Length: 158
Image 1: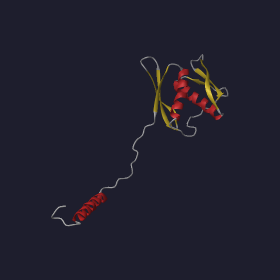
Image 2: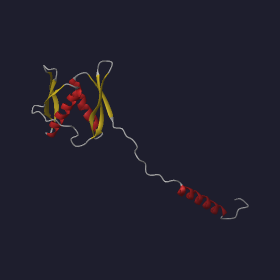
Image 3: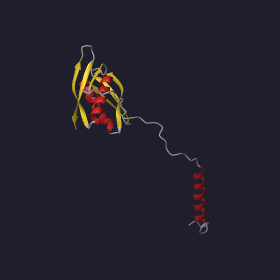
Image 4: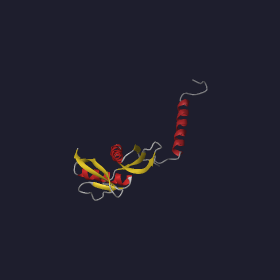
């Protein structure tokens, strides 16, 4: 103990320092709770070489995005120097029937010219089959005389 201090002086000194510290904290600016300022959706990229592979990639992207309670939406198509094509999907929050459903053909046949049209037909066939408690598989892709192609889907039990 310091010979010049009296008993209880260190208690009062500690209390004064503690009070001063609390007063400074009380005067400090108060901030709101943390707020999210940005977010990005999960994204997945696939390479494919054929229309059949693109349909398979779409099904794989649906499973991948499903892990995030999301559905795939085509962000862009591209090509790689090796000759393969590339598709990038954004996983967007799932909403009831987010897919713009075309009027399904009774035989689930969709004519298309572009990869995006093929994906749209594939998603519509998938939505139709799922609404009937089944999943879909590609039965056939054929080229038409006018240059379009037709993808015929078949529903199968799970």
